[in-house]
Image (cartoon, rainbow, N blue to C red; front, side, top):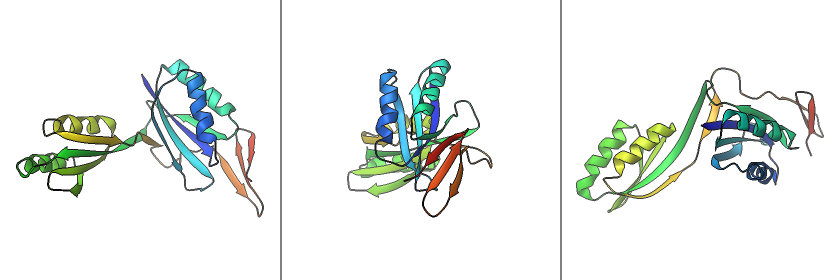
Length: 185
């Protein structure tokens, strides 16, 4: 079963390598990894999807907490979370095929972001199953290239999904998570 973890980490060089190394050492294949800054430029958010059972995912989650630059970890598998990915799909689009492509674009509420004489690039942001469905329906038209971002995830509701507090003074930023202290540079 696929497990989705969100890791809140310090936005510093080497953090991604440490997290990826942890998964490598545990012999986990990462199906999807997405990293980006949060509303705080000193903090990044990782969405990691791995194919594992729940017990193994719990072990990895516990080991992630041990990494110095990891502030918080949350397993959102099966919880009320929004998971999305973006796909760019380049399709062969001769004039006679364009109507079919545009019809699928409209059905899926996708968007055409580039048109050339012989090809179109379709963009879709949706959950994984919807992206998979559009890809399968575009295959007969002729897919030339696909790129997918991997999942991003966010818990639903007003809880921002982060369980850390921030205090800042003139010289440093401090984070406290479950009694652990993180000081900025």
